[in-house]
Image 1 (tube, protein in one colour):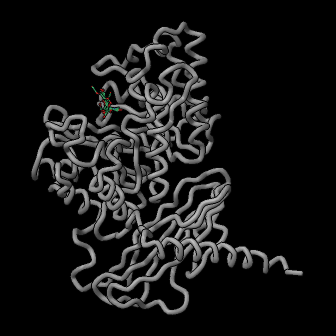
Image 2 (spheres, rainbow, N blue to C red; image 1 turned 30 degrees about the horizontal axis):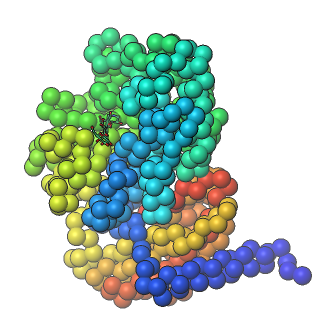
Image 3 (cartoon, rainbow, N blue to C red; image 1 turned 60 degrees about the horizontal axis):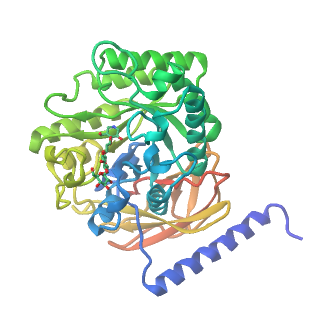
Length: 454
Ligand code: G3I
């Protein structure tokens, strides 16, 4: 009895009722927590999102229960990389027996807060369980491909980008491959094989090669460059190159950092800063951090930055105080430099200008879809209108929206939401809009950009 054009509206109403019910229950219980604050003016993640990038942190599952750790993560970052939990020794300690507990904990935390997840790492000579090193070539090949396939299938649709192969080249002037069980028994072709297996396992994930001491032009980065160029020419599936960017006084940010990122980008891959930390303190450390952020922003194919930890005390090299937050989660000068390079300002919302914050939360999930809700809150002045961009990952589709008026970019993946009806909000007042995402197999959280007020 209903016309074809009426049916979507019915679905919208059904979903809307579901959202209101969910929010009501949570609200009545007093535990409705809004996460993933996206204030363009005052957080790393939202400021990066306003520039079309993510800003992530390496996360350890065993710190998620620490309130300040979790709240700093949830407030400041919109991407995570498990620091150790997805490595081979953690997920496949004995052959064909997979243990995803700690990694799942991080992925589910991230998805609940609207963050991307980088997968780290599938094939690496370090943190390899003993049984792998003992295998003969044919067996090792099948173990490597099985590991990639099993782990990527487990996380299919949930990982934005995978470090498929990590650190396969030697330091120094040789440009040669590093000795490892994979290199020594399978030869140079193991990297290509790993990438081909990875694409077959999850065609929706970006596939990266990740390394350190490749941040400027040198023999090692030249060797990686030549490999990536060859892969692109021959159609070997590679989408991105990760530059770890572990810096200190012996290994400072290279003068040609941006040029090096750009030459890789010019090969047709995305580039990402994947493990950034810079030993030091005060303004010297801040200046170096600023250089890295500015370099990424200057390269259009540089899609995001991940710092290798949150507070200094949990860094793999904590004595060098290389991160953005001190041991008590105070923001360091390096934090201010990063925020400012990203175009943000500390203490956003003040100053009397028109500002607003957008806060995302997933309100319900079912097989094949989920509902997201964004709360738009005016800053310390009344605003007359607002816009918030929401980006979903193909093949996801936004199948319904409510309490807002969306416009779409040509890809169909970026929705810019504006108010429908009364657009004005008093100082500190808030409103919400919602949407349904049909996942089509990809349950990545949407990226909610910064709120722009007028
Ligand atoms: O969890 C065990 C604990 O139970 C045990 O008591 C303790 C004793 O040593 O070890 C703990 O495991 C340690 C683990 O970090 C978790 O803290 C390992 O020994 C230690 O080797 C491991 O270090 C990690 C390192 O990779 C291993 O190579 C660092 O946390 C991690 O930050 C670091 O990350 C790497 C990237 O994956 C690749 N690029 C370089 C980067 C820095 O080294």
